[in-house]
Length: 344
Ligand code: PMP
Image 1 (cartoon, protein in one colour):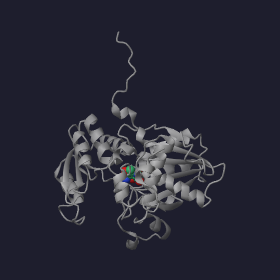
Image 2 (cartoon, protein in one colour):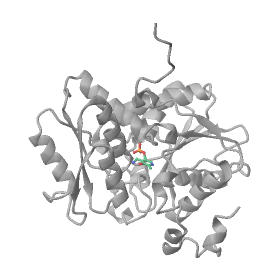
Image 3 (cartoon, helix red, strand yellow):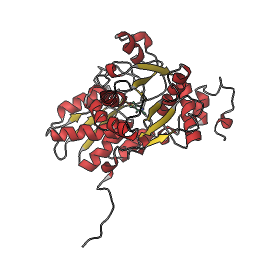
Image 4 (cartoon, rainbow, N blue to C red):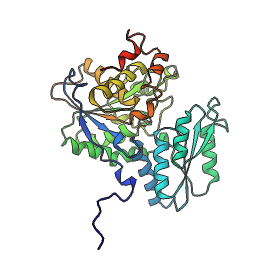
């Protein structure tokens, strides 16, 4: 008889059930209790593992995907990595149409995970046949039995978090959560998690984090897309220049905007104070918490859950590079030397 081996059947078994970790030092000056749902503990190091696995499973259940089918998406970011990982295990071909703005590191990483990467010109309009949207659409139309994940417009993105992130947070807090603060990019994470939590307790406050240069906050307040709100910003994965179908604005109580500079410094602060090596948008969410604290959003009894979407290793040449921080002018207004900023 074979010895009993304690092993996972494959890497996908490790998706979800990420830990909730109490924030101690960084939250010490704030009113209330703060806990981070650390999504970097997913095997692909981000929350996007959940949607990749869920959407692909759903397509299998519906009989759309069969052995050797093709999965298509338009991102060089976390979602691309997660889809590539799920595709390897399930035996699908993964095609990612990405912008030529994507870094070489990201493209190499996706290719290392078996994805076929089409690099499309960045400076063409979305309806140009060379744009990554159009290339993805064309490949989807031409490839029989393929699926196009289209995360900004796919309601299964919300469903994935309704089925996993929401119940996990409810159970990890024993229903005692008072606030959820989360970034909104596609909106899938905050919308699915919030919908579940509000069904359990409608009094839980749901606060979305948006970027300056993105339309989400204004749209939530006015119901209109104000193109004057749109301008370039550096943080990736947060905010948008259009209204995604994967955002359920009704379950979000309010949005708060954060700057690129504050978010970068706060991400570095989380890493230094809590020992949790987080990505740029985790800095954004914690920065939002600091601002909300100033606004008097919390009380001593508040139990606030924040979602940290991904791992710091993806930002070595950005927020964790003093050179990059300096080049952005992020050290200027704070009157600190770059080298000092990373010392204890
Ligand atoms: N942070 C990062 C790093 C992301 O890649 C994303 C996804 N775009 C988000 C936050 C926001 O998550 P969601 O798309 O579910 O709103």
